[in-house]
Length: 422
Image 1 (cartoon, helix red, strand yellow):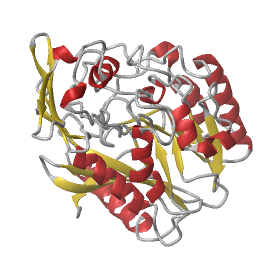
Image 2 (cartoon, helix red, strand yellow):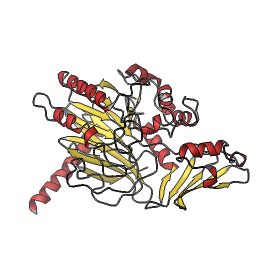
Image 3 (cartoon, one colour):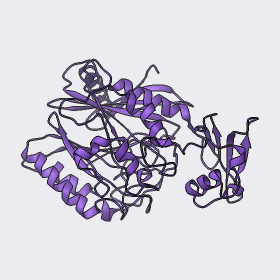
Image 4 (cartoon, one colour):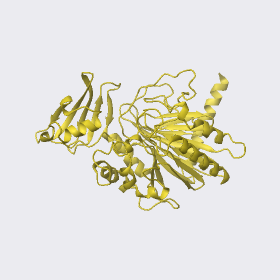
């Protein structure tokens, strides 16, 4: 018992020292911000005269609710005839109730199939966007942003920067980032491709045209993976494909899984030859996960490749993997690799946890919730890198629980949280 107490004290002291060194302007060389799963279920700016079968609202429902029609929904309109509420059925009972702002964007979603029932408030996404912008708008304006996928809902409303989804994203985030770019980078916002980016937009026209400098990184309709180096670190972005299968690496990823693993291996080997220490990998579907859809299947999971590079005798790589998709946040530390699932960017929340099979090597001890009850949470991660170390700070808002907190996370995924201001 004494040994455990001593180790606990040492861990806490270490976290305090990390906080003072990395976030008070100590040895930090550069920093960036990461978040994901920020999509909302689409703009529903419809009026009462548009709710007939085969009308605009019916077409929207068919595209977004898996074949249901307007006749399946209970709809409410205000005195001006604007749609203000949808009640979504499932198996004869109320499944979701979506309340809209006057401009048609979701304000509140109540999901009666989950506990707690309130699963999304639009203010959560607003807080994440505002905070992310603040995090990269320091004096030097050298910060940049990574996203783990699911920015838009789908291509129903169009696939260019003037369409409803992408125009909203530009106005609320991209256009508010600091002007210019960090030295050596082609932009300030770098996304991995989520399944929603290619839903009803298989060529990913919406994302490619809204973030046009991705073309300089060789992103095309047929290639959704890319890499770049910055300040001695390597960044790699992979495409896990569409929704089917929900937890698996989909066959429609571009390139396919085998070709992406071949290219990723080349990029990791190059990082070794260049004496790069820190490697950051962003992809949508998680390698390790217990929430919601769960983790990538064993036959299409990059972990075995990554752990070889993390354990290499000649030049081991320090690897951190960011993902999303499951609308919850989790952390794992396996084979000296950090896996961080970032699902608190604004999408509806998931609280369910899957039971682990005893022979499932990808179902490890989850370190973020650590067995505690999951609650509604919006968050973003800031990462500071120096020549010798790497530090993480999770910034989170739990509207129904503890308010605002800042959590300092060290390289071994030890975490200490303190209350913070909004």
